[in-house]
Image (cartoon, rainbow, N blue to C red):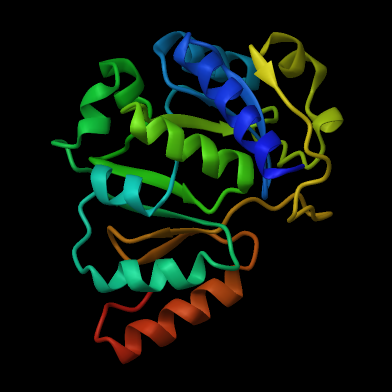
Length: 226
């Protein structure tokens, strides 16, 4: 897909979200569901059969991360910038309640996008989501969602593998072929929790990501992952 097509697709997906729609979009780790309004996020939970006690995750970049979270040591951003060049990952940080993006969310969506005053953010999700994140940031919109599958069934790496029930009821979808990190185990993104420096989930490239951080942390006097 050309850069022009990626931008146009991202704009169309975001336009749907701006009108309270739920978008099914390709990401490097699998097809995912993104929205912003209470209407779209409630629809996402119901389509997936996801428990309302299980919070959503934010699709972001470093600019979004700095706005919505509290980062105890800015050196961590240097590591993230480097690891994101070749990897997708997610991180958890304490929530910045004064964030302009956070304040733009409805109370219900905010409650279902955070947990214990922390927030999880996907980084380097793939070309279309990356473009959507940039465009949304300019509009003061935070993109929240989850993977495009029934709850606890593992990621789907091709559009046609996403359950028909989901595909039929989203407000926007597009096909970008196979996801970059397609794998037979249907593993998802590795999540590092920087609230307590633990591995919340071991997923794609988990060993590589953990080793990279531990090495960086040792050299820069940062807490190690436990």
